[in-house]
Image 1 (tube, rainbow, N blue to C red):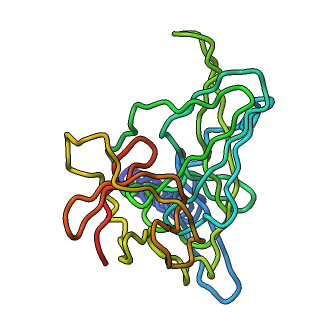
Image 2: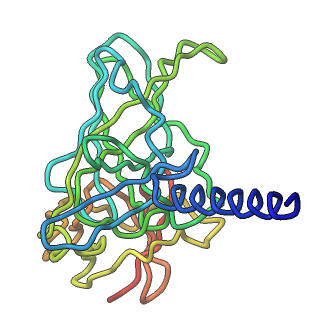
Image 3: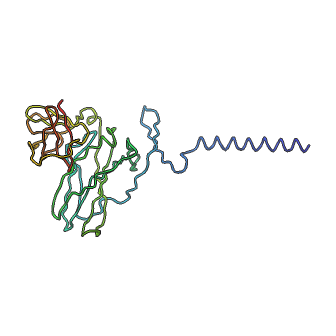
Length: 261
């Protein structure tokens, strides 16, 4: 009788363990994992594990604003406009982060590489001043899918060496099917020829300080340049010829390589 009692207890215990395992498998996400579930009409349920935003407070720097320049959004980049109507001296750098809104919540867009960094450089935004900053995120995020996004950047209220306060600015933008279908890579026309962004920085270490020319006009990101010294990513960028097929363009304190189409 004692043997049968032990056997019965073992069977009950195994059954409880099995039921517990089934309940766990049918439940929600495990601890520490944030699961985004999106159900669109006529589409299969899609589940993606993304991290939620860590920026609960943005755009709290009084008198300092950041927005997306109209007509510059593409699948791989955009141009930001800064305005400083305060009496503060501001500095911002190359750091940025992309987030996507899903079910009214912001989530960090996953990067396509694990180990990366940003150039240690500062751009001045003086009191009463304005500025523009062009970003190409293809190296970090690839091409974006349709949806509502925002770009987050940090900016300093700089009072002196070691004396500053950091704020975070965010600017919303959208990517739709039109953007996806008509998006073009960054291009520039110089001397009647079209050059396309390679997505790489120039490999030239030493160069003369004299520019061979300057990009003086721009078209939208969905159009090809049609005039000399015209681009679809902005203007007032100097350039130098590398060889018959390549040109380096100086943007955001970096030399970017463009090659002949």
